[in-house]
Length: 339
Image 1 (spheres, helix red, strand yellow):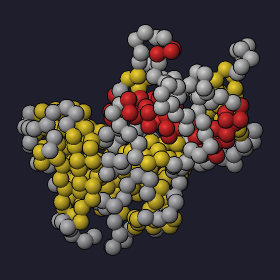
Image 2 (cartoon, one colour; image 1 turned 45 degrees about the vertical axis):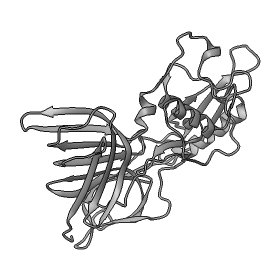
Image 3 (cartoon, helix red, strand yellow; image 1 turned 180 degrees about the vertical axis):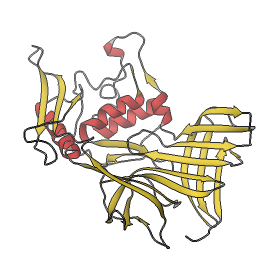
Image 4 (cartoon, helix red, strand yellow; image 1 turned 60 degrees about the vertical axis):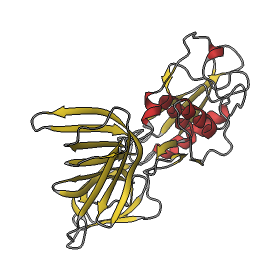
């Protein structure tokens, strides 16, 4: 591997911090990217703004913009400080939606009232506004309407992020903050889609270790979606079921997931949701855990070309989880690829 000069920077509350070690982790399955800094610098307060970059001399990339400090720990010995936090979506995770009167007419309800909205991304944007955030871009929800004109789309006694997850589960949507700090809403399936980087072994390669596995852990070949009560008023609910056989399960065997939400107001919408989720989850999970030389251009949601002679892998993979880290051992990355 080529020897390169490491360059990394982190500012907290506008102040540049000394770095003993620094890491940023992003995971497809979690709400926020996280950072962890070990430093000799004793500045910083809870919820200070955080910006991080990493790379090599003359070639660095942004890893986090507009993050927030969660914890500051003083350690003696050795006389250092550990500062940890999350990207800006932590504000949505920490914001609790509650109306003290418990009157349904007073619940937070972006579907009703002045400036009412009804599409998934519009509802998500209103939820984010409650937490002081906004969507910067959205896609993938054309034709969907959530809630109805009478009851709307109420949210109560849950965090803003839990409310967003209720919306996203319907159409296999996702909300995430990019490294530049923009917040996106869209439909992302964790499978390769156009190669944007590479991981290879050999003298000129960047891989240092790899582990390949496959399992049916996340496979679900039957999805039941339960919507709001029907107009019959007899305890019945709108429902939709989508199922299919799987070559990885015994014949006639089903692994089932259930989605329940009052945001769906028809049997057809429930079925559409069930079908989207079945198509998303009725698949074998193949994963590669890896360690490699750091490359600031590789992030979650990217597709990388993996070439490794021991496993015989030579194919495109989705970046499911990745950690970029800098310490006295250099700039490294580790993570999980999926397809």
